[in-house]
Length: 486
Image (cartoon, rainbow, N blue to C red; front, side, top):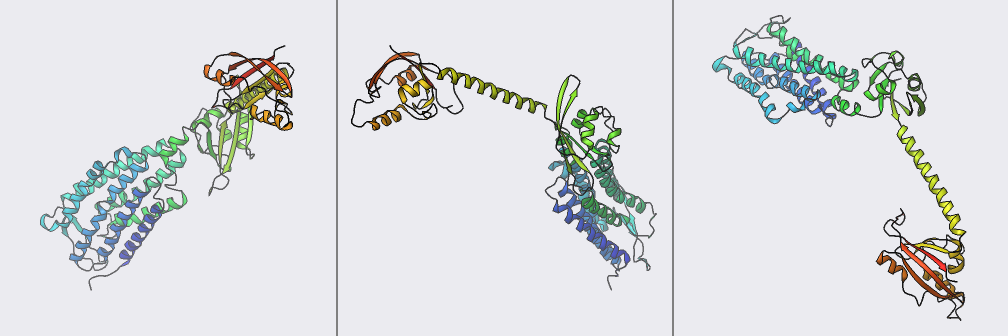
């Protein structure tokens, strides 16, 4: 019988399955930064433990060596994938280039080649013990490459990854510090297991505790993925986005303890001490008591007007519950002083415009001279009362807007179709509007003709305006002032 499946074989099988399940969870979040690297890491660990399962179950030395060689596919690549994952997770993407990644795999590939050709040089395994009748385990005696190329290189990668993680843990706020600690603990487990293995402190001779520790590491990653939202928030992206926002953002729990806070919130609340995470917000040293009270109370969508030094500031406070974190709240503090002032200026401008418009209308409608303005298509955009009464016969000053002279001329002619001389005003005159538009200068014209059967002679002064309005922004307006010539 070539295979004897023992409790150790079952343990490695479970380890492998747990690892692959963790890889599945990570892959579900593959659109998130570092998720793909974590997937590759856990798959490599799963391959490692899967082949070790067959090594522990093999009944002959030849089979054990065969499966150990295959296990090296995962054993030499797992530390590299872990290093790449840590670099991505901690925001050290500048180190992850194709050439550098390929360089990281040079030593593992050499180790793999040495493992598959060990019989010729004994650099990896220098010898083997007999298989234990009690555990079905075989001890491996190690050559020089195992200590230098395998253990030495793996520990170097682990040390570098640990350095990056510790630096990350120190410099990041509580939410992401917790994530960094999770990653550190998960990566630290195989390191401890490796030390126990090479120092001869194994509880079972021949049992490689490094792959065994992978079940613990994979379990920690799975827990982090499900319960601490590992990879759901990207730390470096958070630092870049949240810390540069002009809005103040903070998270407090049910006891008003600060879980996270950005620079803008510290500035608004006038908190000098930046290390207030975990402390009640009331004890943070905030100098603005009124704004602090607005942040802590349960009211939402508050708008507070606060005197700060020589200025009056207006803040809007919005609060949102945080999913899966009962009683915790995300609070956004927005300084809307400039917005309110701009709105006030706009309202004041509109009021001034309306007042001036009403005054101009009053003046224009109380003058005996006719006053109007046209666009470049000869449509009226303004008329005064004298114009409507004496020339257009319009019902009010709004009726001519958008209409031309021809509209009113034809309407007058239709009232008296039997009299061809009823309305002839302007028929014998030049197109003075066009003359002014083309010349761009103020001009004087004599305009005459019958209006309501009576002869009307006007002294007309016309000029092209240099003013544009929103409604007629594509045209120059033409203002026309008409005077009766007595």
